[in-house]
Amino acid sequence: MHKFWMALAAAALMTGAHAEDLPTFKVTIKDGTISPTRFEAPAGKRFKIEITNAGKSPAEFESIQLRKEKVLGPGVTSFVVVNATSPGEYVYFDDFHPQARGTVVVK
Image (cartoon, rainbow, N blue to C red):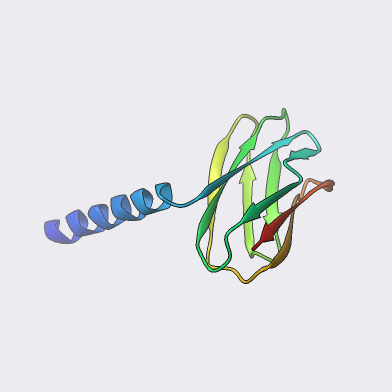
């Protein structure tokens, strides 16, 4: 049983290390604003979006098209990994402030 837990821990570390190696794009959400409102990412490859809530209220990064969402408390930074995606434009927004929107252009 001990070997099982060691293997599970090693797999978790490898997954985390792999996410670190992905192209990373930073998005900041702050009390109803989102920045950048547009960025380009590679088509056909996985990439990471690092999200920071720089505001004083909760924020929720969401993209229905990318099938990603992440709730963040004030001052929290986290990330989502986007799987290989076809070229196109994908909208993201703060679900608590829907007017705060951006677009990932996948080329």
